[in-house]
Length: 337
Ligand code: EPU
Image (cartoon, rainbow, N blue to C red; front, side, top):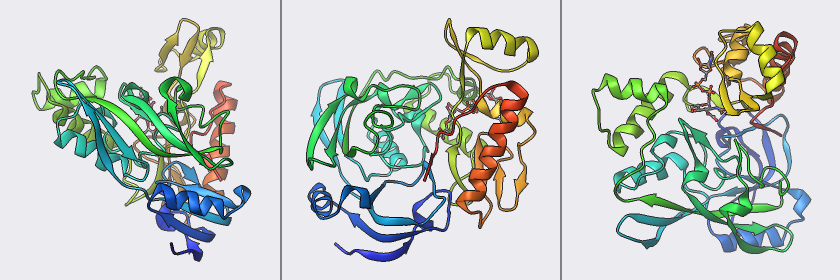
């Protein structure tokens, strides 16, 4: 294993922020990961997956451990389903495409989400009516203190909207090394009720779409709204969609009768942060090299050489204005380092 010094992380975060790691190592197996952890104090390391959900605002004065463990293995199969173990360093979208090629259904709506398989459960990635938890069986993770690997069931992960126990109570304690999914081999359960998917399928007159058709529809929608991190640095949705209680919602609805919303439960209502940010006047705005994307106000972008702090200052400015205008606090989805 090669330990590099003063390594630029620009190519390792999808925002494309220029920051350095004091030390950097890329591990390609669970045993290599254990070996590195055994030799470094836990306060002095930083775990890096696909770098797609973080905003770097400072150099990292620690050993950055890049989880680069690859492999996809069939664990078991029945006539209708297959269970796959996927190692944490696999690229998420390449894994989804691999499933589509094998006609394994369940992940097609999650096409083109940036990041790696090992980080996907942390925030229970989701899009177009499907979340990771819908096909998740279990994951293996290393306890950073005890240096032992253990299995976590779906129940233990306690998934919620863009959240899991790995993001809450167990934050920083474990490193996910592999994830087990159960996918369908036939009679796929297709989730096409989301408006944009229906429009896309109708454009192609697809009445009975295959999982490949759905994946292609999702790719087309995402490409039309969301910037490609390879062309324009970004981290997907920067904020979570806020959930407000019934009383606050009723007041909000009177003042904003045309606002889109989603009823999570009879007492909880989700308001699209993208709508709030657009109404607050930020959509398409640019401040230096930091900006708000022109097609999706939920996405902050780096036009070239923005620093993490410039993006973070823009985020704070947006939060303040949204709070002032609507009385609603929007919480970042991205981890600010
Ligand atoms: N909207 C606006 N202006 C905007 C953006 C959105 O008015 O600039 C309105 C839309 O018109 C629509 C509503 O907000 O009525 C919802 O927009 P959209 O369907 O695009 O979804 P979203 O709430 O903005 C969420 C996820 C996305 C995911 C999409 C599709 C979160 C934080 N984001 O976005 O996830 O792809 O739904 O399911 O939940 C990500 O996490 O990186 C991500 C892109």
